[in-house]
Length: 280
Length: 179
Image 1 (tube, rainbow over the protein chains, first blue to last red):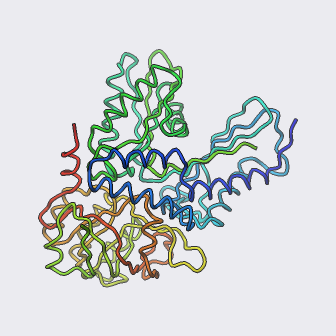
Image 2 (cartoon, chains in turn brown, yellow):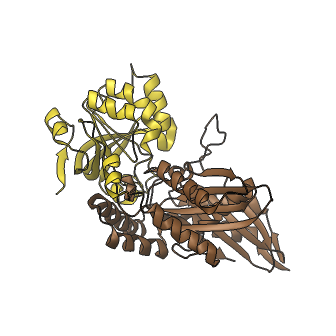
Image 3 (cartoon, rainbow over the protein chains, first blue to last red):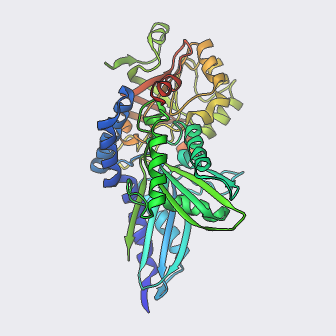
């Protein structure tokens, strides 16, 4: 049994909150640079140039990449041979988020009750997804998810007899309706299968994959490529002003499902795509 | 070529702006997002600032680091403010800065009241912050990041999205590249 102190988890989460909000990841920056080379629209190229410059200013001069520093989403895989000492797991994570958002000068964007809408003032509670896995390590993946892109998520329960084209059309409609609001060029996460809540979680988890890396399953990868090509023919472009770069990547995750069901969720992430990961 | 514009906007300048133009704004703008809009519209007869000829920027900045004017300060989704826009136009607001498409009602109202809607780059809050030279709260301080801030900006980069002729950069831009 390996012992890990709760305060170590707090420190790690705090660091991830700050790092994710100030330092754009290499995969995203590479995708933006590639998009700038290919983009044909004049306004689209100007937007992409600004985004690349923005990433540089954020990192070097310490300004958050975006003022919507997001709802804190924490995926935590806890090895079953780990014992957490000196505190409880969810409190340790939330304390890390609270410290990260205050010490990192990040915006507090959480309200405690959906109707009363009073700010909790420290960006907690985080959305925490815990999984028990083999081993004696803890893997923490932090995602700062903005409201603009989360607001355009969509779920649909298809008939089990639905074909791939119907699902592709659903994804295209979702991206088309979203237009400029999720801050294109976007990353599209799609969860297919499971049940209602599993498909939503799969869609979110699909976003965690390295940008531009296709699925290891050949059929799924082919569907990702097909959707990416079609999404970029919608013409939405950077910030929705028209262009050939609407999505940087499409990631699909699948899971077994009931014989009567075919649930599909689409979750879109903006181009800032703030995801960071650490193993303790 | 980008056009340089000094605020406030006068009739001649507004008439010269066309959807799609890249513009650099210098002068004073005011932030307001969802929560501030509800209050502004409820108190439209007695708002905390005179709205005549003002530019409203849909933004809720991050808190500034010590010694800085402001934190990251990019635009938020404008369509959430669509339902609150007409009373502000009636009170004299001449322009809005945000991200994303507006409703047909807003586009028509902009035409009627001779006002413009600009887009700033969503997710470029660090770059945009560098163009903000001063910031102070002038309304609803209890709203924190959603308070109304008066910002003095220099060469703040925006694109005209809806001009006074009713043209829409989103519709025209997307049509051009849709296959």
